[in-house]
Length: 560
Image 1: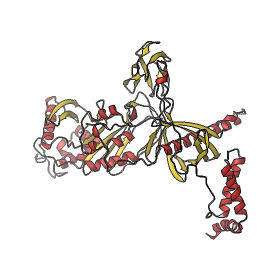
Image 2: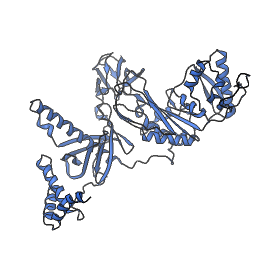
Image 3: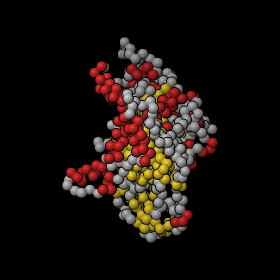
Image 4: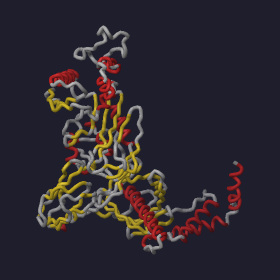
């Protein structure tokens, strides 16, 4: 059953089909065999039908004289390795002598005497054993599902997938670990099996949530993991136009049209919150900027050059747009791995944050005493916003909306200009066509105005490249993101850290010296932190137990 598809391209396949009753399914099989015999075809192939549930009739679509990419679905529910069976037939072995085929039709795998013809199987009249449970397959594509499944291309920094007895999959990319713009968008396939359809669906949900893909591309993984949690999918109340309706609605990236709702049994709860997502995103951006600029500064010194002092700036202004809200945050570096994050222009209210880079490319963050691991799945550019995953939940930040510049958000080739230079275009009008992964996609302007071309036909394009500029008819009517105001709803907001009476004095003294050393190293210390450090030093140096702890700590290593 390949009903879940978009633009007639399959997204989810599953078997055995449960939409058609067994009698109709039997008629489909016999019609497929009759068609193959009529044209003299003797090999693996697939006959595709369109089934009408209201009429309980099926209509022929096409015959594919080859092995389909979703053939593992058939293999899982029948127990037959199809490529191996093809090779055995090519070697001259009769189909009814292949052990797995014999088992499928309720026969012994091997017979002592096959010369008398008693081992022959009449496939037209011999019934098969029932299917072995249910199998569900999901195609993993390099497409931006939130933007109408636009193809994307670029490098992949990490792909983490673990096969289990219930789920397996495969992935393919070029030797450089990237998906180029002239390849097919599908680069992976997941298969989940279970004792029934619901068991297979739950196994697939778990596999998609555990699959981690980080890089320059966008994928449909998060979209599909939400898609198969809809009640309509759970109850198999779907058809070939179901997904296209969701794409057209495009509510929060995945539509909730016609009263659709997610299954309560498997719906994912968003426990992070937009404010926390914005602060974590700003923390990662500021940390990366500081680390990158420090490297540039040191590289310039090694070459005998005098680098710019701005590379050592410890104050970073970060703007992030999430769900139409623009967060303007000021990130002040208080130490190598410590920041204080406040709203720009309001420095008295802030939250303390810590960040460290992990060996797998992630970021260990601590904000307001809560630790989380964040991964950048896409650093973002002028056309595509930053994408970040925290605790299995993906957050997509929007790029700053500027309708004066017409940019491409995909890599490809500018094939054709649909309007002339200096022409007037209407809102939503296509101005050119871009060839992306063997498809021609129109690029539409978002506002009305006069268009001026900045690129030529045949030009190779990268995401974010400028194609044309637009002189708007009504610039005052352009909708912009709402700037966030007020207090951030996160743990630790405007709560200054204080000395703990339970902290051992030698540890508190060490922490205070580290903070003062950071200040002497050029990092910015706020007045509260500096005063707290001085108070802690005064408290600890007068503590009579300080010498005991300082001596007992190294001795504890010797004592074991």
